[in-house]
Length: 280
Length: 121
Image 1 (cartoon, each protein chain N blue to C red):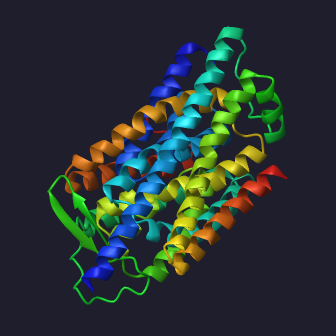
Image 2 (image 1 turned 90 degrees about the vertical axis):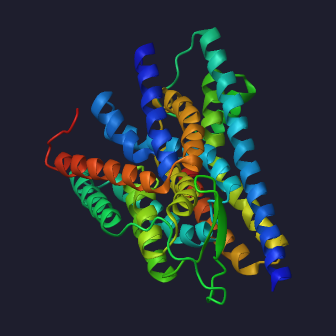
């Protein structure tokens, strides 16, 4: 790898980490296409590098989100159990399955998520009543610096959320992404969690999910330090910046960025499944 | 009711502080190790390897101040950080008497440990 490619991979990772951290994603959903389309890196190597970068992004960004109170640690632990199991299964599938099938599945899931967010986005769902039942002890509050108001929320529909988290874990493992691109819309739309809390909780979860994925790729010698090192340097710079931006940006804008980004990626992945490249 | 809620909020604030501190420490440790490895690689003009060494080779190489192994240790350190933060969260839930979430966090920890263990076999 020459110096320019080193710098280029670092910048691509910085971009992925900035947006990933802002949106509660690991950034892998941006990084894998960037590495394969613009740097001619083998998809399996890109997925392995992406998994390490997702962990890095989560570690750096989550420390900010947790201190801001955006991360619901109890909820993250509850949803993480099925997600991590799914990630191990997904990573094992990824080493054996046809790549175009994976691209098609992810593309359709992304487009569905974008459409759902656009149709019925919930900036901040209605606050729960004082006596509302909270059998899982998940009620939480945070101070939103953008509106200078306290947001009180109570996650609902926990059991379907657990089932979908398992599916998100499988896709994470297959694609080297953190799974936030699925988790954030599910938390927001189905579980009635405000977008910032969904992004903060997801940001922490994607790191744990990607640990499982990275471990499987490590075992199969698919972690390439010549790609991972410049990418990690880029992530170090981008993740902190992205999580700071999240604190101050209006939630409505965050949702629009999310919808545009995942719609673009959804179309790219569906086209890629049929060997048509976008922007490459 | 208010007293219970205040105690619960205090526990949550403590948990958040500990989790954030573990993540920051893990990040800093990984950066220092990786930077040291990169500087050594540049000084000795040794290229980075195209595959990450196994844990035993990294340990042996680290003792010999091998840049390849030091960079590898930096990468492994960052991969292990969420695992350590989950461990700290599980222990904090347990100390705070929250058995349900101590158990759930321990389950998450066991799953992560299984995936890491499988990779080392």
